[in-house]
Amino acid sequence: MPKPEFLQVKLIDYDFAFAGSMEEKIRTKFTEDIAPQPKS
Image (cartoon, rainbow, N blue to C red; front, side):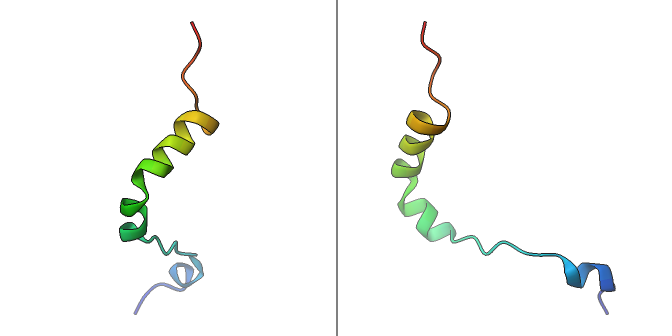
């Protein structure tokens, strides 16, 4: 029987197949918009 506090934990349903198929797009979005390389 799980402990009651574990029943309150919210889980993330992550679609690994989709993320893998969109890897290049996700990587580009991250490097260009979220964390671009510092300019010299």
